[in-house]
Image 1 (cartoon, rainbow, N blue to C red):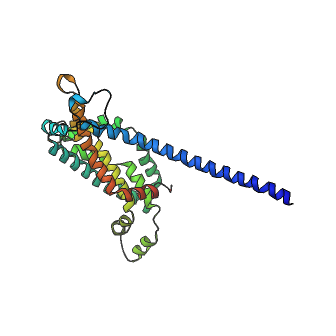
Image 2 (cartoon, rainbow, N blue to C red; image 1 turned 45 degrees about the vertical axis):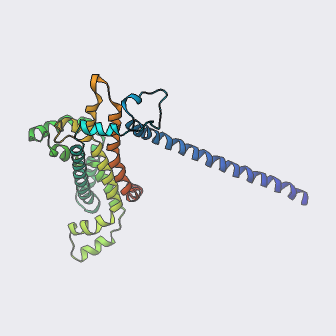
Image 3 (cartoon, one colour; image 1 turned 135 degrees about the vertical axis):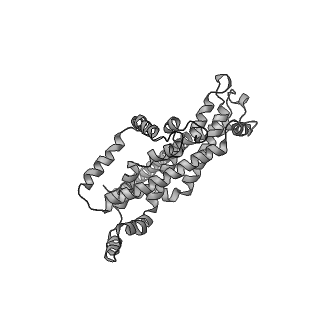
Length: 295
C-alpha cells in the first residue's frame, strides 16, 4: 500500500503541474491574441494622427516615421484656410444630433407598440418591418433622392435628417429590451388610471436608459459618418457635412492628394465620435448586454 501511494502521489503532482502549465500557456496565448488585435486597431489611428502632424515633404519619407520629426500643426492651419471648419462642424453636429433624437424617439415609440401593446397582426407586421433590414441601403438611394427632389428639399437639412429617422434596427433593439422589463409597474399604473403615454414616458423610458444610450451612440455615429446620402442631397457649402467636405480634398493641386490635410480632417472627424462614446460607454455596454437577448 505504501509503495502504491508513493507512486500515485508523484503522478498526480506531475499531472497537476502539466494542467497548471497548460492553463498558463493558454492564458499567455489569449493575451497575445488580444494584444495583436489592439495593435491592429490602434495602428491606423496612430498613422492617421502622425500623418496629420507632418508637413507635405515628410509624408512619403523613406523609411516612414511614426513619430513625426519635426511635428507641426501646419496641416490643421491649412485645412482651416481651405474649408470652413466651423460651418462644417455645425452642419455635421446639427444633422447628427437631430437624427439621433429623432431615431431614438420614433424607434422607442414603435418598439413600445410592438412590445407592450396588444393588437391584431402585431407580430406579422413586426416581421415585415424587420424584413426591411435585408434591403441594402444603396438600393434606396435613388427612390429617396427622387422623393426629396420632388418635395423641394435639395440642399437642406430636411433632406439630410428626415429619410434616416425611420430605423428598423433601432426599433428591433429597443423592442428586445422592452420585452425584458417586468410588467408589474405597468399593471399597477393601469390600475391607477394611467394611459399608454404615461406608462411609456414615466416607466418604460426611465427603465430603458442603457438601451436608449446604445441606440443614441449608434445613430449619432451613423449620421456623423454618413457620406453617400449627403453627397447626393447636400452639395452646397451651407449644408455640407464633414465627410463630403473631406472628399473634396482628395484632389489637390496637380491632382495630387495632400494626405496631411486629409488626415487632419479625419482626426477632427473622429474626435467627436470618440467623445460621445466615452461619455456613454457605461450605458452603451449595458445596453448591448441587455438588448437583443429575448426573442
